[in-house]
Length: 200
Image 1: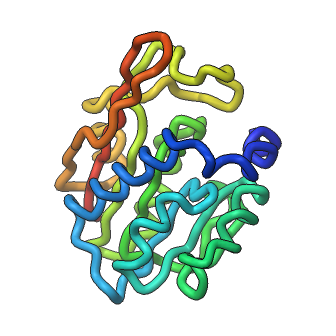
Image 2: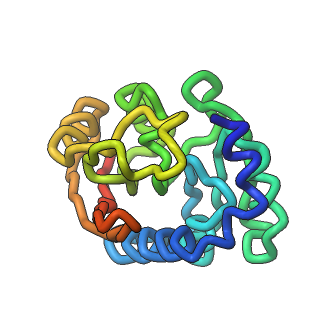
Image 3: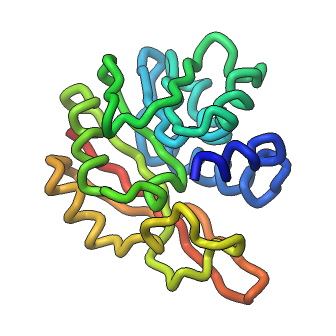
């Protein structure tokens, strides 16, 4: 999977659909979560930093986590992220970060994680008391969303109530869901993206 994203990294930001998705998720986070100037956030599955660009002006700093070095190479050279974003190419399931965070944000990364229950527990362990997660991903779909195949896709989206249960099992409370984006694909299908917010 990392090879696929490494290869795509150089062209990633040229997709209007990807930039619009990140804009809508970022707007949803800003609308539904209180971001403050002293906060340190983790951006999980940060990719080229499309989501980080929307939240970093409102916080002190962001730790961008991804398993694709190619994606992070694109992130670290963006002028808008200089001085406020540090990149970590590691799998935090096996190699947690040493910091704890005021919040964790993520855009369209969780369906690429095989053990969702475990990663949510890892998120919980990385967050300070009272901290939040703001996680965006696909509503449950039938496997047709990824037009280039489902290599590295472990979940065809998530049922919201099932995802709520996973968050509760990890220890999170005050859970809310918002629809922040709708993809309209060439096959005339639509695919909704939710934002789940929850607190420790």
